[in-house]
Length: 98
Image 1 (cartoon, rainbow, N blue to C red):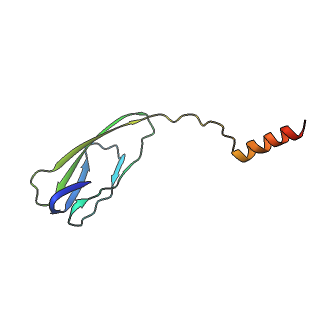
Image 2: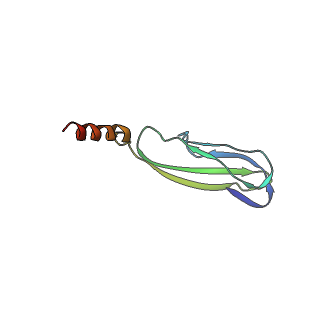
Image 3: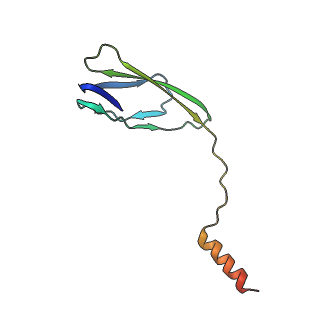
């Protein structure tokens, strides 16, 4: 979220890297508060991610700069999960078969 004392317009937001992990939905409307939805798509390779964003605002001589960091971890192996219905049927058949 970006908040100003007066309504403002965001011209563009740029990422410092070419990783293409972040996508930002940008509104060209003039308003005092901008909520910027950011979508992160993790790369296939695990590791640290660091990104610097540069926000250009109409009429402001200096851009705003903010940083973000993330850690991408490898997925865990899927664990076998028995649904509750199957589990209760197994318990019923074990108790009625004896």
